[in-house]
Structure formats: structure tokens, C-alpha cells
Image (tube, rainbow over all chains, first blue to last red):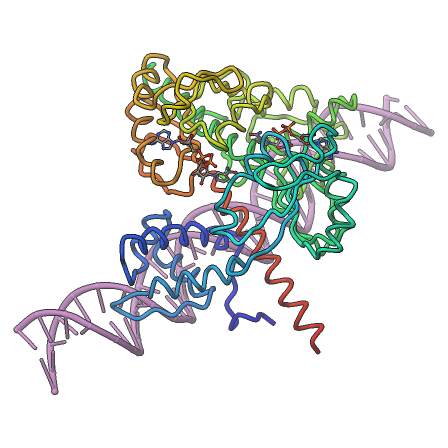
Length: 222
Length: 222
DNA sequence: TGCACACTGTGATAGTTTTCACAAAAGTTT
DNA sequence: AAACTTTTGTGAAAACTATCACAGTGTGCA
Ligand SMILES: NC(=O)c1ccc[n+]([C@@H]2O[C@H](COP(=O)([O-])OP(=O)(O)OC[C@H]3O[C@@H](n4cnc5c(N)ncnc54)[C@H](O)[C@@H]3O)[C@@H](O)[C@H]2O)c1
Ligand SMILES: NC(=O)c1ccc[n+]([C@@H]2O[C@H](COP(=O)([O-])OP(=O)(O)OC[C@H]3O[C@@H](n4cnc5c(N)ncnc54)[C@H](O)[C@@H]3O)[C@@H](O)[C@H]2O)c1
């Protein structure tokens, strides 16, 4: 059933891989050739066994006493994540955040993601260029996506327009949506949505800080 | 031991709260007064029991047959997340992403986060203003943080400068760091780090798409 | 006033993820 | 070359999370 030699990876495991990859690239820059699970685990903050199992899921084979070959590991993880060859993506919403995403070179250089053009509904923006990418009217998204076989869409429009943008993407055959709006999207079964809701991340942080401060207050108060 | 009536919430549960909150605010705009767990669960994509337990962790009490009072629920969640009163934050790195964060009004309006000023090491940026916030030299971060009792720091500098920025924040008494760089940070025990690594989110998306496409290819091939 | 219903609250159960424990393998030292 | 050390790979146990099942309860309706 599973293509990858019967190994599976959990969603949580999947999310450790980019962090491991980033650490491996750092090691490679320092001239390292091999690495064992312990420093990887330490760096990303998990158990060494966990790291070993995540790597195994990508098809990595290590050697006792030596560890894993870094170059090979990087290649395996990149392939697993689909970062080894370039994928084209469309961006909906060339505002504040959308522009930042357009200007981020790492997507192309590291993650194999090429945001080929951006779509907006603001007449003042349509026709202009941001970091070399033309801004097109949102009405053209569906047709162009189908014509260009673009499979990845990025949503950086306000919450109230998010579902509309998602619908246009789905209509254009887009199969994976990276959603930066806080709105939960409704999409067909065969479409993946990754909800990069920053307020979730911020909430986790402030809640923990809040709880800790309250606890300290109580301890100090006594 | 636990301040909140013995109820605890897992990290995963915590991350559902901002989504629930966002949905509740939407309902409130439509003029709803009460809500039950079923639509909440449907909207954020979890089991109704889960939602009920998350709400219980915030101290919410519902009424059989009626559900929960939306206004009360919003207040409870906001308090739990620490979004009910304004917190001041410092931003390190007023580049591409940092500027987008400075320009995002929701942080102040919805999440009680006020990014009061930004720090950079680029002489061309220092002294200028972005969305009404002055850009100061990074060397002043520690002292100012301590003087202003700022507890939240946001890192939007390149990976290689991230640890340095974190160190400056810790030195200034900052206790919660929202890290947008891919670098894993080393901080003391009493400091929280939330790693908003977008490559993690992107990796999860592209890996799933990749896997699905491969599977479909195999199915089609036969 | 009482009966039926729809929902909450929660202990029990199932499922998933992480950690543990240990055998097998590959270098290293003597 | 043998003993020793370090690290992988993996099945088993523990911890955590989500789902189920159902008792309890307030509300609306007769
Ligand atoms: N800026 C941030 O730092 C930040 C942080 C977290 C989340 N977000 C989320 O990202 C999204 C965008 O935020 P932003 O700050 O870039 O807002 P923005 O207002 O700067 O940009 C939104 C862009 O979308 C365009 N737009 C509006 N409706 C559209 C439609 N129907 N079709 C196509 N384009 C449309 C607007 O013209 C504008 O260019 C929001 O959902 C916001 O919640 C932003
Ligand atoms: N732009 C994006 O969409 C995006 C997406 C994901 C992650 N990120 C991450 O966010 C971070 C910033 O990205 P960006 O695109 O804004 O980069 P950028 O180059 O546009 O901005 C970085 C800013 O940090 C400043 N800086 C550099 N070293 C510094 C130091 N030691 N102290 C203080 N300031 C310093 C620079 O002067 C610059 O203004 C990076 O770590 C990047 O990986 C960005």
C-alpha cells in the first residue's frame, strides 16, 4: 500500500523534517560529512529515536558508529518533501504579506517553490510588478492555473475573500493551498490545505507566557 | 497545582483556541448570541467532544440545550490567550517579513500585540519609520527592553543573525520569542520560543501533494 | 406541571506518538 | 584478531490525544 517500503510518517514527524534539513544544511556548510541522530535530536528538540524513525521514513540508511551521510540525507529529505525539483505556485493577494512572500528568495532557492505570478483585485495593483512578478486580475487565476498546470496556491487575501480565492484555485485545478488567512477553508477531498494561521502560533506563545507569569506572581505573592 | 480548577490543556488543544475564537467572532458578526459545540467542531475540523474539552480548559461553562454564550466565550478565550490586554513587543529585523508584520493591524486590534518598535543593523534603515514605528539600532534592544519591561520579542532577521538577536532579547529580560527564522534557538529554561518556521508548514503541504501525485500516477499507470 | 429533547460534562476506550530497551552492526583500540 | 565502544534499527511499553458512550441537566412544549 505504501510506496516507501512500508514505512510511514505521521504528520508531526513530517513537520520535523524541514527542521532537520535546515540543521543538516548548516552542518554541511561547516564542512561536516556525517552526522548521528543525537545532535540532530538535540538541535530540533526531540528524542534521538524519533529522529532515527523520521529519517527511516524518508528511506535513509545509517551506519552503526558512523551515522548518516549528510549529503545523502539532504537529498532524501528534499525528495521526500518534493523540494528537489521546482514547483510553480500562484499567489492570491499581493498586499502586505503577499509582497513579503514574493520577495523571499529562499522559497525558490531552498524549497523548490517558484511563485510565478500574483493575483489581486485592486485595480491600482493590477499590471504592476513586485519583485519581478506581474500582478494579474484575480479573475484570470482559474484559467491560467489550468493552462499552466499550476498545482500550488498561496492565499494572502483578507479573511472574507479567502474562501473565494480558494474556490478559484480549486476551479483551476490547484491541489495544494497554503492559507495565510485566519479563515478555515472548505475544499474538495482531493485538495490539501495547510493553514499557516499566524494567530495560532502567536496564541500558543502568549498563552504560555501568560500562564507562566501568573504562576510566578502567585509564587512571589506568598 | 493548576490554577485553572484542575483543568489542563495540551499544546495541541491550545492551538485550536485561536481558530475557535476566530469562528466565534465571525458568528458574533452575524448576530448570533449562543453556539453549541457541533458547529464549532465542524468549522475547525475536530470532534465536538474535543471542542468541549478545550472550552472547559478556558473555564467555559455551557448550558444543556442552549450551548455557550458567544460573548462570554470570546472573553474567556481572549483572557486565556492573554489577548485581553495589550502586550508590547519588540521586533528584530525590519526587512521584508518584518515590515509585513509591522503593517498588520490585526495584531494590535485582535491579538493584543503592540509592536512598539523595530530594531535593525542596517544603517540605511535605522532612524527611518515603517508604518509609524521607528527603526532603532539593534544594539539598543537589550537596554530598552529592560527599561520598558517588554516581554515579547519577534525575530525576523536572517538565520545567521537569529541566535544573536535572541541573546539580546534574553539579556533584555524578554521571556517569549516568536521566531520566524528557520534557526532553532538556544534560550534559558524560563524563556518560551515559538518557532513560526514557514518552511515547516510549506514542507508539510508539498510532501502531502507529492505523495498524492505519486500515488495517482501509479493508479493511472495500471 | 411534567414529559421529551438536545446539549453539556466526563469517565472509559481506542488510537497515535514518544520513549525505552536491547540486539545487531561497524568502527577502534589493544 | 579479539574485545570494546558507539550507534543504528526495531519491537514493546508508556504517555498522550482523540473518540465514544452515557449520565446529568436545563429548556421548550404540551
Ligand atoms: N501582514 C501580516 O503580517 C499578516 C500576518 C498574519 C496573517 N496575515 C493574513 O494574511 C492575509 C493578508 O494580509 P495582509 O496584511 O497582506 O493584508 P493586505 O490588506 O495588505 O493585503 C491583502 C491584499 O489582498 C487583495 N485582495 C482583497 N480582496 C481580494 C480578492 N477578493 N481577490 C484578490 N485579491 C484581493 C487586496 O487588494 C490586497 O492587495 C490576511 O488574511 C491576514 O489575516 C497577514
Ligand atoms: N520574507 C518572507 O516571506 C519570509 C518567509 C519565511 C521566513 N522568513 C524568514 O524571516 C527572516 C527575515 O526574512 P526577510 O525576507 O524579511 O529578510 P530581509 O533580508 O528582507 O530582512 C532581514 C532584515 O534583518 C536585518 N538584519 C540582518 N542582520 C541583523 C542583525 N544582526 N541585527 C538586526 N537586524 C539584522 C537586515 O538589515 C534586514 O532589514 C529570515 O530568517 C527568513 O528566513 C521570511
